[in-house]
Length: 178
Image (spheres, rainbow, N blue to C red):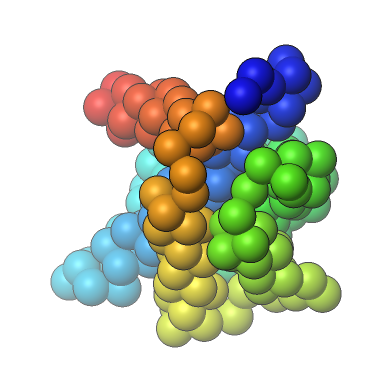
């Protein structure tokens, strides 16, 4: 089976966007836990670090919002004007999945769609517990997608999704180490 270049591209970017959404959700979770569990709240420094790791400090500064948990989480998770937010990553993943729907299993499509639906009409982030619940839901759906991808037939579609995931994971790891 040969894939058209636009199909291969959509599969590749689907893998990248799902992996990016998962990474950003995990950064949010780690920062919330760091801030909540430490004896002295890390506050602005912790959230500045999260923005640095995601390479979004300039984009956040452009919003003019103060560096608080609520503002940074809203920016990283829910901001529809920010292309690197979780909601935008999931929307782009869903668009790419829709373009290659016949190359995906039903389980893979369902996981992407459920992840996207988590954010439909969501305006606020809530407190720490609500944020952790949201992050856990995103992680569950991205793991569900990854599991569905691993159960797909071993064909070119699978390898393009996995390539996108691997490239995104390598980029995220390099940013963390930096």
